Length: 164
DNA sequence: GCCAACGTTGGC
DNA sequence: GCCAACGTTGGC
Image (cartoon, rainbow, N blue to C red):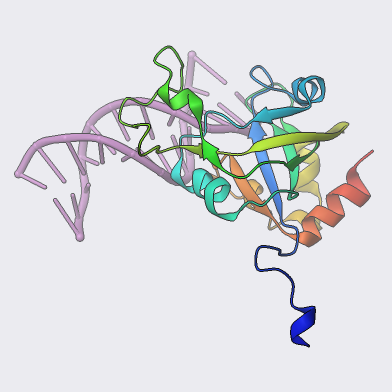
């Protein structure tokens, strides 16, 4: 490859993620109404690290409804900001308040997410029924991570074959 | 409401 | 550094 064809340092192939949200707090309809949402409330280091260190603007997001009568993928979104401190960690009245986190050294970082489309719900049992998705991180036994990576093959399969 | 699985905390 | 106790997640 010639040097002139080398892309700018910051660019890389688009990556893909699955992000869980409790629809009581923020559903795909909430995102559709507001256009964008700050992904507040993540208080797990691994999930935080994905937002802080790995996500890039433009990455694809499977928007997943969790802790609800019908868990599953409810639509598509896109990462639309670089990481910044989750403001709720400093709000005393917030459920997500973290007294140990100081503004000069914020513990919890988030990104904003932009609405792309709503889809017919792809339920958890349906996801589990597809051999092509057998290795999805979110489907692993005991998985509780609210943000998980999705492979390009999984993304392609879900968005082109399961989404309506 | 139950409970399996996992992360975090804190005593030692 | 170990590990028991505790808290949380999230499907059912």
